Every structure is written in structure tokens, then in C-alpha cells.
Image (cartoon, rainbow, N blue to C red; front, side, top):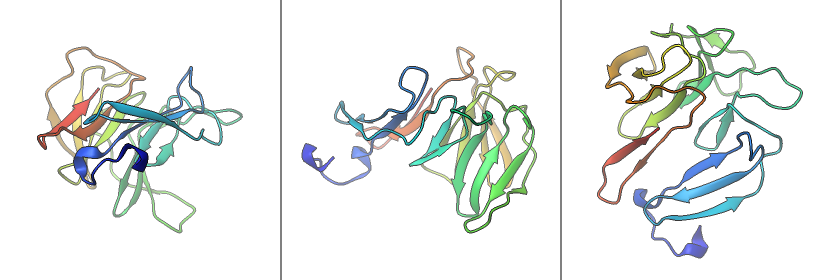
Length: 175
């Protein structure tokens, strides 16, 4: 991004777009404040139905492995794995240096085929939609469900979402 000569700051952060049905291993970055985008080196393998938190690619369906289809959220306590097709009401946390996940809190709603995005202004994650919760939008903290937010106008599942700052400093949640 230095070739774009962008000044440092939260208004020049980008949105990573990775994988998907027609771009199975591709990665692109889009900087909303400038309208610029570029391609990055490919993922080491193909992914679709996955989630990302920062540079971490989580779950999804990929070559030769069973689909997990859970959400992930990086917290100070570790990586929180939420829901999924085989366990839509559970969460597990994986701490750095550990090989095994340990159970965490119960999900408020059945969570599978949903999308998660970090709330950039708090220590929480926002979950949108899902197979059985098409229009539901909920906030979770490290201890569990916090609140429901206004419903999606159009319910959806297997969708993408993300959060970013506008030039004026307001946060945008994009679904």
C-alpha cells in the first residue's frame, strides 16, 4: 500500500476480500476512503464459506477437508470459534500455544452460515444473518450474548460482512 502514498491512520485501513466460489484462492484489498483496490498473493489453498478476522482465515469449506462453517473472532483471551453446522449453539476458545479448544459460552441463537465482524469501537463482535436467523443481528462479548441490534432489512445467509471507518471517523458495518 505504500506505493499509493497514503498517510498513516485509521481512515486508510482496507477491507480484505478472500476466496469465494469464483475466486477460490484470491485475495484483494479495498481501501474505502480512497476507492483503490489491488490483488495480493493467493491463499495457500482454496476457501469458500469461510470467515476472516484481520489476516486470520477461519473455517469454511476447502479441498480435501470437511466443512466447518463456523465464525471466528480474535480476542485477548484467544481465538473464539462460534457456531457452525455441527454445533450451532456452542463456542470454543483456542488459546495461543494450545492444541485443543475448550468450551466457552452458549450462543443465544442457532448460528450457522452467518457472518461476523468485529466492532471497531468496542471489545465485541457483531453476527449477522444465518440459515435459521436470516434477519437477526446480535452483539457478543467475550462472556457471551450482549444484545440484539436492529434486524437486517433483507435476511441472508452465506453472505459477507465487514466493518470500517469513514473519513469522518464514523464506523460502518457492511453486510
